[in-house]
Image 1 (spheres, rainbow, N blue to C red):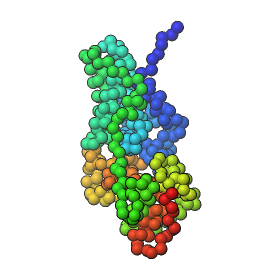
Image 2: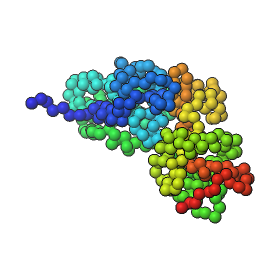
Image 3: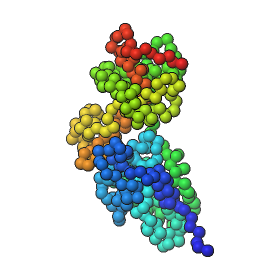
Image 4: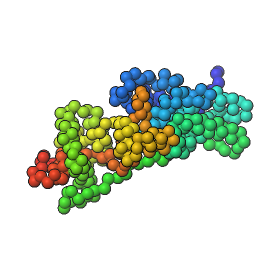
Amino acid sequence: MGALIVADAFDYVMQYVSRACGEEPICVHAGDSKRCEITRHPKYGAFRASATMIKGQPKPSRLWESMVAMGRLHDMRGNDKWRMIVLDCVMASLHGRSVRISRDLYVDLSDVRSDMFEAGLTIWTETVQGVPPRDVPVLMRKAAIRAAYQRATDQTRETVIERPEDFLETADTPELPGLKPSSIIHNTDPRDPAVAEQIRGERNGALFHKHNCMDAATRFHDDLRAGRRPDVISRASNAPMLARSSLLGSSHYYYISDFFPSFIGISAAAEALGITESAAYQMVRKGTFPCPHTRMGRSLKVHVPPLMHYMNIPDAIVHPDDVENGAAHASGLTKQWRVPRPLY
């Protein structure tokens, strides 16, 4: 009989990522190859081979910048996919090293790899701010090697992570701030979920009117109602806690971020943040830029939802009717653009 092969932390990470990525092309630029400006994308196996470090050095560094940015972005959404991709590509460079440490120091290989995984994940969490993205994988790899050698000098430590995804579920991820109700709707209880939902839409409609972008919002709403934006409709309609989801037209719900472009250039992001473009590039080099950024070809792009989060702009789910009623209210019209729907 052959020797029994027991899966370790490295195997679980690779299996988890393989399931998450499937056979679809993987996009490190926009997270979705259909929305990316780059036309060609590899499947995960080829992507992993190109990203795996040789002798501890990421190759190429711009690829790792985008990988880390995608990981930070998905962390904000409570999604582990890209964090695990980063870990898998880092751990892939440690297969041979882990075997040598296990053999030379008489330590169980599964223990060595579990320690490496846990140390890498710890560094990922500790380097959210103040560390340039290209430096993160190198720090993760060094910490993993230190942790493996520490196992040999601390035999009392017996923690083995058999399912890395279970460990990841306990990691802290930032949450988007809640939306405070306003007083646009009078004589109602803002604690009622249906009322709060309508208030969200009307408040954003008032903001659209204030910033003179209601015409563009109306065109966007027309596209939703005509079924020309199925990607937006499916994403918002599947979101939980829609108090009025049983109403006619519930499929027209959308996230505020869907109205804006998915990515903007670094100069536009700097303007939104109130800093100069040169200061923004300097922050990117130092790893202190407050939002995840990625490269598309030679261009540096900033993802809009994290930028909204940093600027305390809630990415609320709204309905076009509510938004248009809020704009009409803010403009002082006595006749609303659309007849308001009943709350129940």
